[in-house]
Length: 253
Image (cartoon, rainbow, N blue to C red; front, side, top):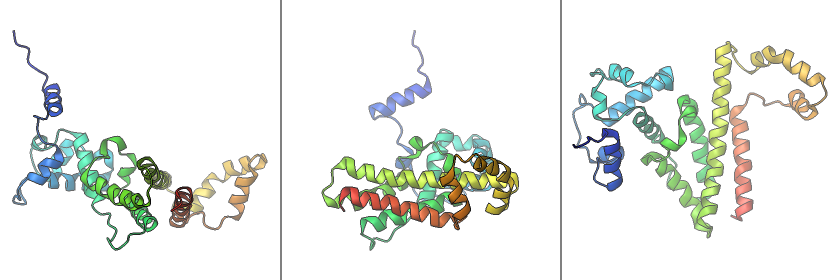
């Protein structure tokens, strides 16, 4: 008796043997131009990004996507397998917005420009802060951004591990700082606080008690003396420059 293969397992085996269907990116590059009314990976990606921007990443479902595109609920499944494919398509689409002129060649300026743009990109598309990063790392647009930065670092005789570690140090700072900023903004919005002053006023009882213990003198000095508590752009740029300074000094470049 012949036992039928599980379709998902069969697909995985075909892909591993090199005989399966081409990847999303191969299909996008091979596809011929179609009328705008036709359902394509480009249209699917654009619609998914619009939904996520308007309603949050959790609102992006295959059924919601079909409604936005005006197609039958199962139509999109002829192009994507499910949510994971949508995530990578969405990330690839928004990362196309990042661009640094080819005339910029200094390693520090290349990395700094991409970092500043990535922060703005994440603030404009806050659903990016909760994306499963291992899943969405390998897209053409993300790799193009990484390639430009790695190439800028590679011309100093550094070993491959040092180049990648330096690149990832900057990327980790950018994503961590942007995620924190997005989380704070969401927290303020959920509580109806218009900005920093209202937030601090609401949290003042907790702050007063903690400072009264005398255990946090350095933090108290910041709370009383800081003048840029709500200047997130300045704070990000200053922190970024500290990271870049450290890379330059460590690697001697």
